[in-house]
Length: 491
Image (cartoon, rainbow, N blue to C red):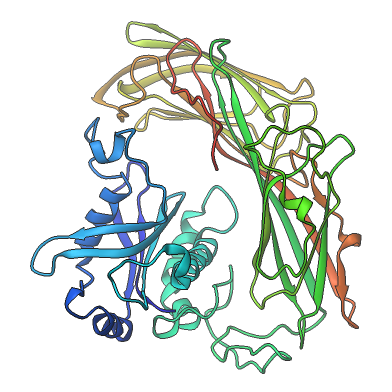
């Protein structure tokens, strides 16, 4: 499997959309031309790729309130494989262009399809698609890490090292591994690792005591309306990633996930192909079906033969009774000012120890913010008048009452209009929460480091961690309208 091209695109809101990095592989392009014959479509220039990709993803024409391809309910992109319709002399369709988006970046690549273009083969039959997505996921982790708040300086530094990283993980357009976060740019000369061949270009071979690292990360999303006529929504998505650093032959490992006695069974479990055996009852629980209480509730045992690189062992969803932070948001408009009233309450089941916790209150389609006469009961408030944004930093702990409030008036009389958003008109407004809680999961799921079994004569050090992240955590103004989904939130 090879890729014809890779693109890294910056699309942060309020900034110019641009291609931050691109790499084309001429040897792979020559093979693509030979395979496609007369139906060959060349990869166009960067500006054309950017325009076509943004159109296909529904991110073009941000200045227009309605674009059919982006906003029509009948257009829902269900496949990771996009079609780019190229005009001009070399017109045709580029397929499959793979794209994933997280934070300020869009990562895309064009795999080589080693099959005739017509009839188009099913995606499930193309190994290049799954391997291309694996490459993009690896690049995403390398550039952004596992956190939800990317570091701009670190991102710029890693983008600068990306050419040398791709030379190692994707030489001549053929992905052989995924990049490691923080891996050194200068290669060392390794020796083969047991019966698994160590690639000659890999950044190095583990030396010293063997280590097995298991990280459990849960992500919670929420839509809260503060209105009895609209049902609040929330969901939890968990992933378990593993990294085995052992000299010589990589041993077989077994990781066990456990739940508290009153925990809800894990659902929608997906596992990595390296898992050697699995109880079929583990895979039977689905969030689509109504849970009758008889679903398998653990312990969940995953025996596997680990690959050389870090990998995602499994993923799951979980139904939890309440979101971690309950919020109330009320706005009252009077001429050129808004009265703001916010209450946030940390649920008693959530550990009161954050790595960070912030509430962002943007105000769209108004004049530029003039004066913000707002007081908070805890934390620190930063005002960005240019962006019409209040950033409420709550620090690492809620007070003993587990409740914080914000109250005050905001006046809009700046010399220029503030940012716009076609959705947030009149009193349609939201708070977006960003937080991370170490050593906790909302479902109660955990990996006991003493239950991790490594079938090896060496005694590796076991490192197990867990943490809870927020993602798309919204609290809508209860005195205005808000978008409502009648179905389950999908991750």
